[in-house]
Image: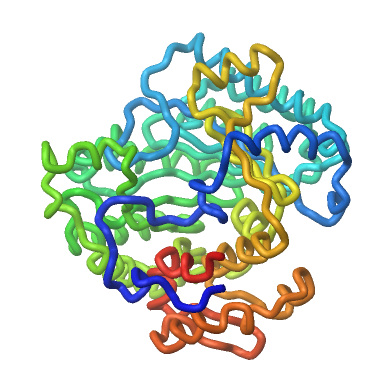
Length: 434
């Protein structure tokens, strides 16, 4: 097991197209429809570890003004207000079905995340309705963090007031670049002026954390334009800045446009993207930010991102909505990806799970290890205590390879990624897969 790292990890095979970012283990290709019924059986019995395991809620809002060129998430553009209302009703019904299950009846939420799509497309009235009905089923008294994703053009004072009153503590705004020509080329509907207006409005409401998302490697981007965008972001002093490297999954409009309206040579190579990201991280650190993962730099060293940290350390997560993912007591699940199928299933008062995967002990061990590597540091003692396995012994061969590459180093009882490793961590992770 893990006798030799895969060839791609030497930097030889880095295909232009395909998924790069690792968000789950085992990979989605392992999840099967025939495993989905096992969730129902699991939910009929109270979970033995429920008192020790954090529990969170993810709510997927799959609506957008326009689908961006690089987007691979489940999203639908220009849907009717009536459909959105029906979808909100379905979300609440789905949560009610879960709340009635013995395994979740006594669980207390520790974190909540509203993602998309574009959650900020919801109206003020819809936000109030959704929050009130969700809280009626799962109270938020123990919620440490509630995140809501926003797109600049749909940010308004009434919506932000509703979010603040509803208990949202963290706003994450998808900016991607501050260059109007690049934004247009990549299918974004906002302009730089929209970002500046939205950010100033968000800051009026005193949210605990405001995060800005950027993407490195967009169509039309240069070294100069990326750094100019980042410099303008830094003048806004967000609490954290998250930078993702552009990936090109096969279900994106950008992939379908290759060799038609988009020349593949116009896309930055992985080497170029890593170099830009390295320069971006250095610029953030020079401005007083500290890296807290392979993607995010925070202005305050005590700043947490509970949604990410808890999941990477084994928390349970209940996902609501079309295509949403859950992880419950060692079981991965994904809902129906079709919006129509999802609404129909909930209309029948049935859970909308489409496929699933039950992890064994070793798979749970590997899952937490690879996810925690994305945070830049893994503690040996924690894995010994939780899984009774030694990460240095179990992963001896790939670790030796990465030590030689200087992508990983040992620091007492910790494994730490070097900057070179941090820039390519998602490419490294498959070396540790079973």
